Image 1 (cartoon, rainbow, N blue to C red):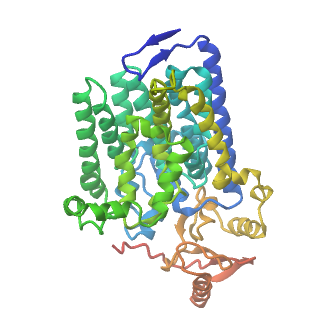
Image 2 (image 1 turned 120 degrees about the vertical axis):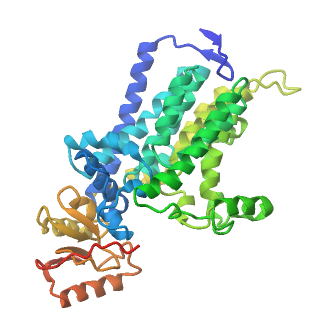
Image 3 (image 1 turned 60 degrees about the vertical axis):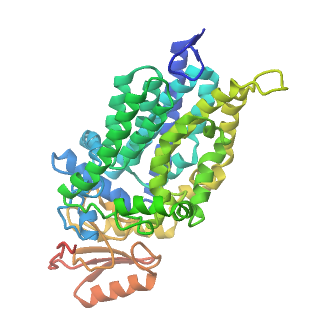
Length: 499
């Protein structure tokens, strides 16, 4: 049955077999969860996960599970805030507390990897419902598959755990619930989204920009724009400092101005500077191209794309923190579900056009869902999911086997400085610090002298550090394939704040 909906951009396609469709969606979600979990857990088992950032979140959620503030000693000590630093002073992400009960079942970083897989897969449900309402079940299956294979999802799964895992499902719920005419449910999803991270207010404000294009939505749009911007200011300038952080710690716009007012004025008075920043370095343009080209540019036909622009501009206007604009890492996943939904809406809008001389409509709605799924599959070899098809991905090499032996040599319940890839394996049973360029004098040290590890500039500096520790009373407990485990029982840790 086809009816007209006031909220959708075209005719609404009602389900003919709702139970069968519900089962299909459930199968898609479970399949995606299994695939994502398997990928992440293989990375963990083969020593490809890292202290920065998996151990940070592991320590924070464990602290929540014990009814404390989300303290991450590894973050606080490495960044100079001290051992009692709450991650709410780094990024305001109180939504992480909802994961705490999972640690009562299994206390370890693997829990976060599986939880992230579930959260990413759950975005399929509102995206599927949004698409079915316009095109029907067959297209919804294709669009769900395009999201499940999308490269930003793959890059998120391939880089430990991050709070951004909450963003696809919550942002898509915000859009889908509004599309279904459920305004209060839309507002609840937007409120939950604000708790993911301080800059999610920009995504909510962007959604308000989209609502400005909808008839009769101006008041609601103003509430979303104003509320989103106000929240980002409040979280960044008030709440983060209240938890021991710095409001300017992630200021990355020195090319425009020393603070937000000066940067805004700089962008207005020197627009060419701002435009140049959007594509400098060139990898920014590459990332933006990868976001839109696999969707065949169709999202550009939809005003839903307005929703992602403030959050995208936040990253692309920056001149510091190069990870923000790389195709790698987790930052792009915040935009993915909404861009795919914009593709659905754009295809619907284009299908209603009747170009002169063609004698009929452009049936983009029949082509785009399948084309988007094929495009998502075709770009897999360019991104992290390509490792699924490599036999070496599933094996521990000699260095990883030696790392496993090094981890086993450390007793439970101790304070240990660990090289970046060894930390996750220790985090469930020890208090882990990052082995970094400042000596912390922990009783136990797990060092890597074979491969350059963050944050050391080169492997020679790591070898110098091991020699320095041995000269200062540390004894070698294990040495194998570049891994060195050192112990000094009488060492007095120096964890004092340095900021």
